Image (cartoon, helix red, strand yellow):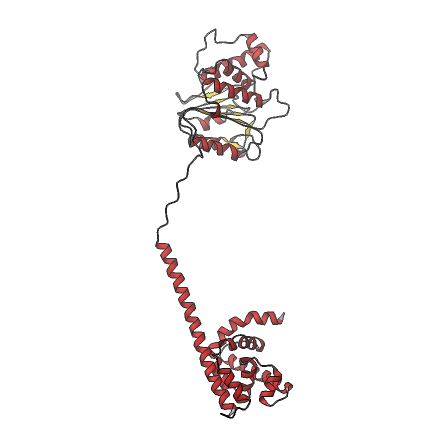
Length: 406
């Protein structure tokens, strides 16, 4: 572990001591300088150091250790607080690679007693040459680092000044639908004991829209695992593809979300009236929205708009979760699918009133319509004058109310 730590510290330590290494080596005595030069600058073993200096291996080890300790003290005087192992590791790791060719060879030869010159003189000259080379190389490395930093900074500034290319154009919808009306029917969560299967009512609504003149591939039913993201994504797609009349029919349950905002119940997070308003506002053209759920009257103040008719099956909380108005509306739509939105709603409301009256029951639900022409929320008959032949008989009402699959 100590060896790993010393090795990791060798790089930063070398950067600190390299500028002062020549001066520190010059302050050592000649025998100490000779020992460090052979041990670290020539990477000799302790046995080889002893042989070159005429010492036994233990004596050579002690001299190297004393020399390192003096070198540590010299560095400490210059403010470099480095341990002996760190100094030894840094010098051993960098000195041999940094030395120019021929310097250490000449020094070792002199240390072994080459007749050309004395050992001390050759070692001192070798050390001075080596220290000068190390100092020059260290300065060059710092200069290269500085140049690299300047180059990176210049490139970054140039990129900042260069204007970014405009983003590629994005389409709001993958493939626009052909011209013509479109509709989205959404089946949300329903109770298991509901008197009628909402899926069958959704399919009957789809058939009515096709009879009204909608292309079959323009009428979509979302059912099964329906969630908020899926509904809003489909409405977003219609915003970029539909330019004509658009219908939205919600079948299932409604409830109050956090803050009392009306919301359509689906898997996961509910779809609030605010969510629907934002999505519908992005769809151009005339719009017709039918919320065939209980507690749906709260949607009308939020969704009403000058180009949008909004029909709710109920008015307030406490009215049936699956109101009779839903089945009545589907029945009247099937009878005359090309009638106006308000006329279909008025006939359905009249059928529900007749059923409660004939069954001797108190009225438990009240449909409402947000009228774009007047800007008001209307009660039945929603401004429509029904003639006697338009009003369903008691027998017709009973039959329509009992119809479950149109």
